[in-house]
Amino acid sequence: MQRRRFLSSMTAAAGAALCLPTQAAFAEAASMLGPAPAHPVSYRNLLILVELKGGNDGLNTVIPYADPNYRVLRKRIGIDREHMIALDERTALHPALEPLLPLWHEGHLAIVQGVSYAQPNLSHFRSIEIWNTASRSDEYLSDGWLTRAFARTPVPAGFAADALVIGSAEMGPFMGGARAVALVNPAQFAQASRLVKPAALSERNPELAHILDVENDIVHAALRLKPRPGEFALKTVFPGGAFGAGVKTAMQALASADTPRGQPIAGQGVAAIRLTLNGFDTHQNQPGQHAALLGQWAQAMMAMRSALIELGRWDDTLIMTYAEFGRRPRENESNGTDHGTVAPHFVAGGRVRGGLHGVAPALARLDGNGNLPVGVDFRELYATVLGPWWGLDAASVLRGRFQPLPILRV
Image (cartoon, rainbow, N blue to C red; front, side, top):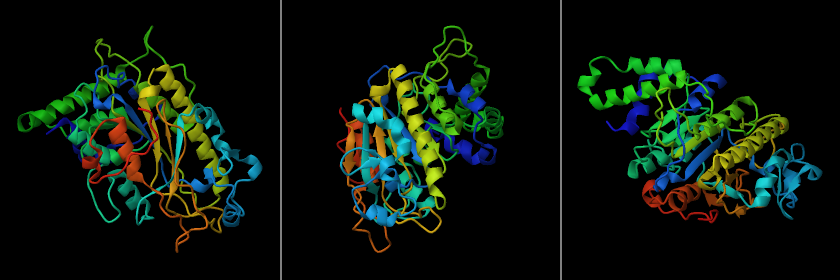
């Protein structure tokens, strides 16, 4: 069995034992991962995915304020003009996104509008499955798009793992075999490891037995790690809350740390990190909830930028949001929005070509269900990561040709 199949084996055996970590467990496990790779490999550029779970309301995030239909469709939950943050003569940001303005003015924040896919599905479960596997809406795949990427072009053996997952036990784009580490309660993780490693396993499957030994060593060493004099510590101030703690963990994971035996515990880092911010399914009483979520994300985004600059990794990191879908343009009777189709997504990093990209919402051209037409296929975002960012064959991973977006300076 290849090492990248470890996680799926563990999950199948330990499923019910997994749980989300406490902030203390996050901090303890954060030092499992090492610094950026020094040798030239495709994965020397880091990808950080931020899932806006539940489906973000794009029209109140990136606001087409010059379109008179915006106020017609959103009489109660629309953002007041005097509170918006104008980006140009047609488009503005939600006021909670004000922390992002330095990033915007530096030209390191790209906003890709109109993102979805043909014949969009409005089920949470099915639509996020489509995004995670990069499938067509009528196609069912069992492996994540990044799992396929890592299978075709493996992450170097010196890396700690293919990916790190924070804030969710779901593997998402790493499902189906990627060697992804989901940060869970270390003690329960170690216990789960023992459940799937009977004494006879070393004889029946020595490769798997070795993998479990290595993973148990990582867990046990993480529990023993304590800050030591002279150890590198981030000076960045991170926002509070579960998402802020997850962002802090992700950044700590990129800093070097040694085990008590003086050896690097986890090689040379990971190729990708996935963070999850929950709560975007805003069917009712949306304004306050949405503002709080966007504020959390914006503050965490700027904390990530500061930490990545401190670590010397801002120029080789790409941060990208994604979600299962957007929301309908017309508000509902509960001061919220229902499941819709397209939404804008954000891409940030030191080598990002900032500005507005994609297709702006055409509120006069809603379809028969009251939804916006698709402007950009989400797999064009993925093709940008796979091709220009990592130098991989995007067509083989995505099972089709999708044009990368002009949002990178590489």
